[in-house]
Image: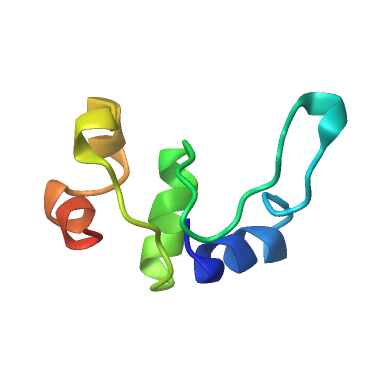
Length: 75
């Protein structure tokens, strides 16, 4: 996670920062690793704020949203 991505996601209605103990969600901070949906990653990539991708942990269906070059460029 990056501060830029977390703020981007918050502004789009998905608060990943605030802890939600009722869901066992600790809240995220820059440097944390977390699974995000491919469509949100692509939206953030287009805005220049996508977090890095762990390609070995990325499902092949992500290629329906982004090219392999886009995913590699995030690293």
